[in-house]
Image (cartoon, rainbow, N blue to C red):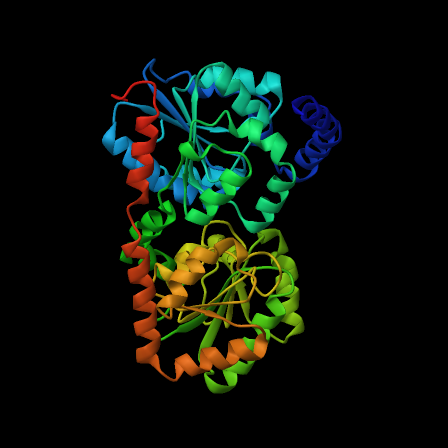
Length: 434
């Protein structure tokens, strides 16, 4: 099976590498990461590290980096002498990591899962322990770590229903790959059960909670809110309907709700944050076609334009969503009225906001359950229901504030997972004194 995987990988490389090269040449995309992904430049990046104990932590992109931050901080607090090498797969994730991971000794890009490339990178990093955040199973990489007797650990592990179906269909293959993992700390019992069902030894699995609660509760600070308030030139009496992580097909619903909302609350402003910023131009076109032309983009503000009293703010840059949620009066979280499995509703909850979302929340069922139990999360099925529920809460500002406070309290009450994951890493290190 591993041979078949490598044959398919080779075919993908033959097709994919020219594509990446063309993207680099004409758009500049992947230019920062591509050489490192092939094993280049790591030697220079890692040259300053001492010959002490090292932990390599890998987070794919922005979401995983957010979860990794409190784990890294907890690990460094317990064992300040170690060097932490932090990798990401995406350039946006790398940018976020450099911003919020304060304790890393070096930042690199994760190598492509080509045998010679992963062996070279592992040799250069030379970790005592490799830690993957959430579920990132690269067969050649894990096999190479096992061959060098490097312990490999999954933290904040989660397996979405869609991923589970794919993994389970090829269980025979993944069972052998998972045998290379020394331990897995999972977010929930459901995630643990799914990992066991695709081949992980039950004795290696623990349920330790979600480190994102730790990260978000710590990040939701008055200073961060003040930063975004100043950046957007927000006035004290302004109220915002924030639509975060919207996908194609959702902006029309959000705009329809907002236009009807203006009939009752003409002072409301709209902040819209597409999940993929490359869709920002399309979203702006949708706004214009809906006669919402009083729009300012965040990229314009970053280039010196000062927001006056524009009706709509379009967030067309990476890394602003969490801060933007602090400005919200009400929130719609996307990827949920279309079949995408939802997006992270905890970010808004950490600011004490009530969050509306559609029925497609398969990837965030535990978070959805927690927030709905205290009334801070509400499922809506269409534009009409979203408008009705928003208006109902706006008529009762005390209830809106109380529900939001309960959601914030839930986030705070579920803190503590990061320390448990740090302990798991230490326990499975080469020596207990790591």
